Length: 194
Image 1 (tube, rainbow, N blue to C red):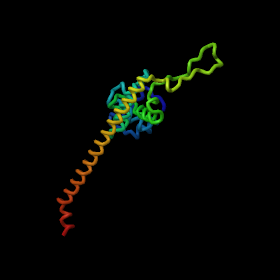
Image 2 (spheres, rainbow, N blue to C red):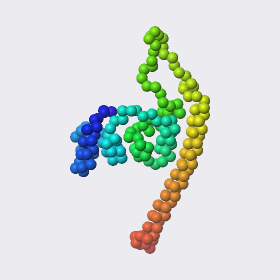
Image 3 (cartoon, rainbow, N blue to C red):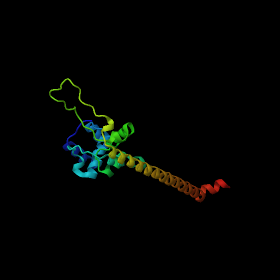
Image 4 (tube, rainbow, N blue to C red):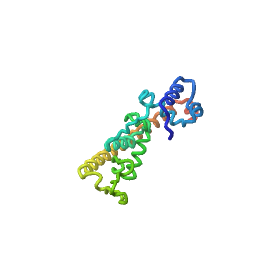
């Protein structure tokens, strides 16, 4: 994805908020995807100018925060964008990436990892860098705490899933009852029954 300047983002957002143009027109004019424009406008409405600025300090999120985000997405009916706004994230795709990493690698996928090339000693140019075993990447107490937290979240997830199913069923029954009531009160239904 191309990186756009704050000034351009602000100009486009203000142009849209004036009410004189649409997402479609702006997308065509500036050759930018409509979804990107929607994100900028949403971020601007929720965070002001800070929502349009690129974050230079790649903030690190805890494993617990990531698990909470994943669980909230999976147990609620909100979109990635809505959840990102609730959590104070300006980029909803972070939640998408966390879910994918969690599905592929489990809790290990959510742990912070070093970026870039591994450091090599000046004298040992021909020797491969040491590799760290996955089992050594987190200590036993942290692993146990995280596994307990996962169990708690899974139990809460089951509970919320059951509650969601209950409310959906109730909503369905209420809707059905309202339709039946309308049919009984409708003048056409009296003519059809005669």
